[in-house]
Image (cartoon, rainbow, N blue to C red; front, side, top):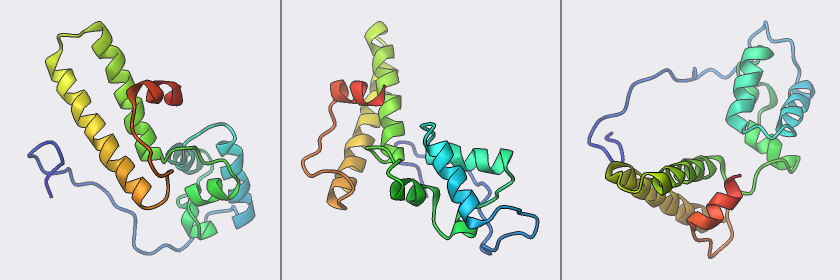
Length: 151
């Protein structure tokens, strides 16, 4: 399938195994993994960063296989999940960063086009989340508000 704003195809990559059983060498139990996720969530880490830390430092290959719930679900249950979904927040960070670049380099038309594409993705994703009830109705993307929210 082609990418959204380019005509190229996506890169192939690794995928998780279909068998979601807990390996025998994992020493952590369900409660311990949940405590680790909450501890890392209190340090304002994203769910992707938490998964990476659990994999690299603690040797936990899959939180879902052990706890039967995802990192995001555990964070939501403990009221540690952010105001915005992670993918939307990452796009907003990119847009704010590119907006700062555009303030200094106002003749950079290629970056201006990139900013327009990022903001289009933010609006499209925001509509999706509003429609599915994950964000408040009437939410609109505003670059000035995004600058405040992201920091």
